[in-house]
Amino acid sequence: MAANVLGAIAGSARVGRYFTVVSALPSAVFVSYVYLLLESGAWSGPVRFDEAVHGLDLQAGLVLALLSFTAAVALHPLQYTLIQLLEGYWGRSVLGRGLAYLRTRHHQNVIAALDADIRGAGPAPPPHLADPALAAGIARREARRLRVSYPYHVAEALPTRLGNVLRRYEVDSGEPYGINVVRAVPRVGMVAGDRELGYVTDQRTQLELAVRVAFLGMVAAVVTAGVMWRHGVWLLLALVPYTVAYLAYRGAVTAANEYGTALTVMIELNRFALYERFHLKPPNSLDEERELNRYLMTLLGSSVPEIDRDLRYEHPTPVMPVLLPDSTGGGGASGGLAGGEG
Image (cartoon, rainbow, N blue to C red; front, side, top):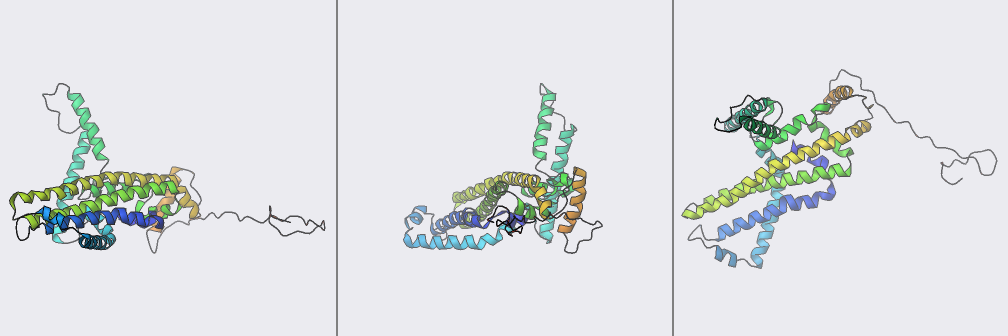
């Protein structure tokens, strides 16, 4: 979902900043790290990072800059794929489907346990606690806090935490109004105000930066393990990029919550502007709005929509020019617009 609406919320004026933050900087750090790793001599002898650092000169810096830019450009179009990968869309292969099944079942079990705690039907507090009622209240409070990171319907669960957060907003945020977020957001983004668009774009940038860092961190961890596997304790160096990747992924989950909140706010504050741009009569009640959106979302989501309702358009009344009397007193009309010169 997140990657589907990027084009609707990122203006051309922000492309340079977006590319620098999301693509260029992480790629520069990644390329520099791999360069030092390979130049440390670990392939053929003892590890000497001091020699790798001393070997840096202007020529090496230019090569690193070129490689960093190349990596940034190469990975930039793959951002949509990276987000889908971390969301849990792993393809139709036997391995992908099997792993997705196991992880989805895990998260469905987590949802069931959280729902049980919220209802007070979860495991009883340990008997040694002096105040079991307090312990049960804490369990319910924590369950409510964690439950909002999952879709309301268990069947909508995805294999990863990031996927579940984004899925929750994709499915649930527009539900009170009958709005399909994936179909509506590209249009709402065209009519929303600058403040709402800026809020969404900032949260989107943070999400994509966290996703890019998580991916490059995992790649760096694999490369480190491959280079250092013969050097004993040096193999623990792989824990450094792995930790960066783990923290970045957790940050992506948090940023996804903020991004989903920003999308929800944009839809809530600008949905009537969407009806106006479609020249649809504004609904008078929430029930009318849901009924209208049921047909509108069908219309927006199908190349050949089949709807059983005659949608009536409400066009604004054309503004007619006001003619001024002829200043010569001849009783004619000057033909000028009101407020203009006679």
